Length: 187
Image (tube, rainbow, N blue to C red; front, side):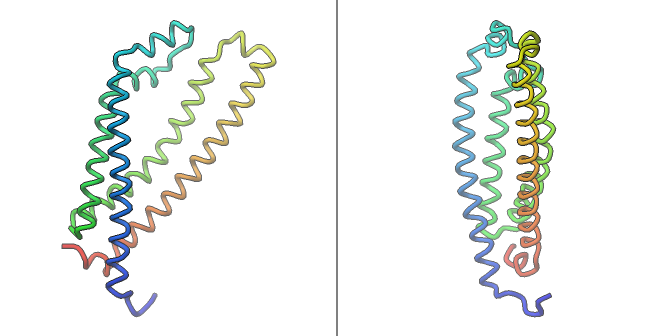
C-alpha cells in the first residue's frame, strides 16, 4: 500500500470525470427512452402478435408478454434513466446520497448484465421454435439449425465476456468511490 494518499485533486478529478461521463450517458439514455416510449405508443395501436400469428409464426410467451407491457416497460426504463441522471448530478455536486446511489446503480447494472444471459439463451429457443417443422427436415433447415447453434454460443460467450468486463469495471469504480480520499469529498 502507498503510505502517501493521492492528492485531494486526484480524487476530485476522478469524481468529476466519472460524474460528467455518467451525466452524458444518462442524458443519452433519457433521449433513447423517450424515443422508445414514442415507438411503444405507436406500436400499441398495432397487433404485432396477431400479425405474427397470421403469418403462421408462433409467438413465444415472453415476446407476447413484452408486447403487452411495452408501454409500461418503456416508462419504467425512462424513470430509471431519470433516476440515474439525478444520482449522477448529485455525484457531481459531491452529495453523499449521490455517491451511494451511484454505487447501487453500478452494482445493479453488473448484476443485470449476468441476469440477461438466460434471457439471451431463451431468445434462441424462441427463434428455433418459430421455424416450421417441415423446414427443419430439409437440408437448409438443418444448416439453419447449425448456424443458430453456433450463433447461440457466440452470442452467449460475447455477452458473458462483456458482463465480466463490466463487472470488473464497475467493481473498480465502487472500490475507488469507497476510498477514504474520495469519501471525504462528500457531504
